[in-house]
Image (cartoon, rainbow over all chains, first blue to last red; front, side, top):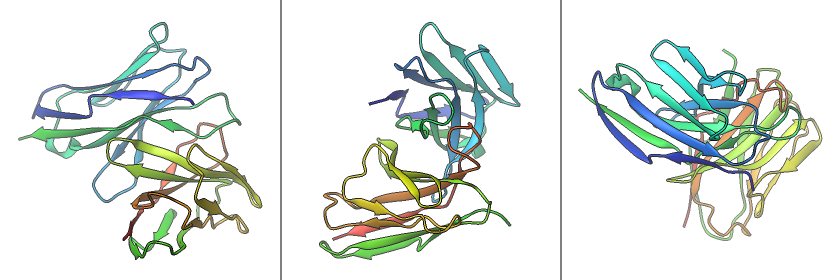
Length: 113
Length: 114
């Protein structure tokens, strides 16, 4: 079974700090790595995504770092804000047309004011 | 507004009863999905459909069934054979399966079986 392992399970960060969430995968056929953000009582929504041909992608305060040789990728939230408090899921998918996304177990982030 | 509508938001059933969760989309998406969310386990894929009248089992399909008679609709039936049905169920859609277009999720149905 394809797996994506996510850590930590929960994270508490002070306002203005950096939040870091890590994911690791085993299947080298994965070629698309999105992050989803979920607020309580809502469905997840796409936050940012990366392909393995680049090592980093930045959108505003959110950055994905990708290490192909280590089969790891991470989400960095700079200048974390209380409004960032949510559950974050990493995910991965194989070559187009073959499969739906496989999600990590989620990280509950709490940003304290 | 385009989106995914899941109903009802909360659902309660007695053990041994089948229950059907509704999912409708007006995004004109070909692909639709059902995920189950449990604390600490993330989102696990139950079933997915690439196109009308076609669907595939995901990682945890046992005890569930689906149909895709219309492009807009992808109902999920939780049968009495599902051993642990209490969970948060999420329906999603994307323009096509595997094209890496974003998944659009509904706001979920929380099912409680007692």
